[in-house]
Amino acid sequence: MAKTFKNLWGQIATFRNLAAAFTLVRQGKRFDSDTLSFYADLESNLFALEEQLQQCTWQPKPFREFWVTDPKLRLIQAPAFEDRVVHQAVMLHVAPVLQRRFIVDTFASIKGRGTHAASNRLRSFLRSASRKWEHPYIIKADIKSFFPSLPHDLLMQRLQRIFSDQDLLWFFDSLIHRSGYQGRGLPIGALTSQWLANLYLDSLDHYAKDTLGIKFYVRYMDDFVVVGESKAWCRETLARLQDHVEGLQLAMNPKTGLWPLSQGVDFVGYRHWTSHVRPRKRTLRRTRKTFKRLRGLYYEGLVDLEFIRSRVASFAGYMRHCDAHTSMGSMLENFVLVRRPGKKEID
Image (cartoon, rainbow, N blue to C red; front, top):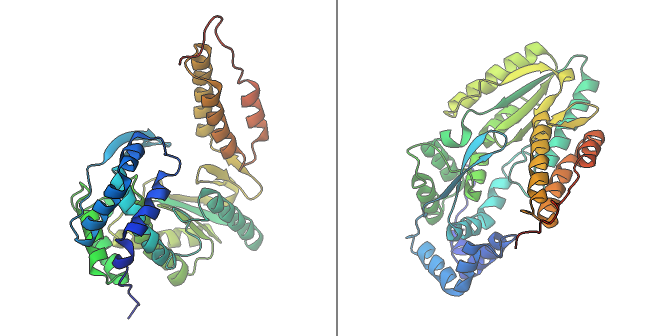
C-alpha cells in the first residue's frame, strides 16, 4: 500500500503558519486595498482564520471575477484575500508532498521550474531527437476546457490516496465542492487550483513516462509535447494518450495534432525549433498595438514614464528568452514618446 500523509493539519492550522502565508500573499501587493484592510487588524484576522480551520468551520468566500485575454479569453476567479492566505497556508505543507510525486518534466506552478525552464527542456528534447532520428515527429496536445472540466469526485479520490488526514481532506472537499461548480470544474486564479490541476494530470505524466516509456515528453499544465521517431509512432502514441485522457473524464482539444519536427512547435508562449526560439507572431502584433496605445496615452499626458517603463520592461523580459533581436530593436526604435505641447501629466 502506498504511503499516505497524516497529521499535516496540526501544522497548517496555526497562527504561525498563517502569518507566514500572509507574508507570501502580501508580496508585490502591499498597498492594495484588500491587503491594507486585512493588515489593519492582522492579529485578529489571523486568529479568526486559525479558529475556523481548527474547528473545521471555514468556508470559501465568493470569488472576484474578471476576464483576461492570454491569448484567448478566460474567466479568472480570484479568491478573497483571506482565502488566499488560507490557500497559501495549506500549500506550504501540501505542495512539497505533491511535488515529490511529479515527474521532472512537468513545469507549471512549481518553484524553480516555470515557462522558461519548460522552453529550455523542450528545446533540448528537439535537439536530441533530431540527432537520434532521421525524420522525427511532434505531438502537440492540450486538454479541452481543462479547468472547467476537472471532475470533483475523481480529484477527491486522488487526494484520498495521498492524504489520510481527515481535517485536510475536509478542507479540500469544502474547497472543491463549494467553489460554485457542480460536479466539475475549478476556478482559474486560485493557488490551490493550479496544484490540484497539476496533480490530476500527474496520472497522464506517469502513464506517458513509465507505461509508454516516452523519453521526450514535457508538460506545462494542460499543454504537452511529445517528440517521437516517426509519424506512425506518434499517431499510435497519440491514440494511447487520448484513451488515457478520456479515462480521466477529460477530452483532447480538437486542435491537437502531429507534424514533422522541422516545422517547429508553439509551446509556453514561444515557437521552438532545434536551432532557435522565436516569439509568437500574435504576441508581437498585440505588443505593437499596445505600444501604439501607450504612445497616444503619453501624448495626452494620461500616463507617465514610469507606467510605460514597466510595460516595456515586461515585454523585454519576454523577448530576452528567445531569438528576436531584430524584432525587438525595430519595435523599440519606432517607440518614440512625445508629449502634446502644453500638456502636463495628470496627478
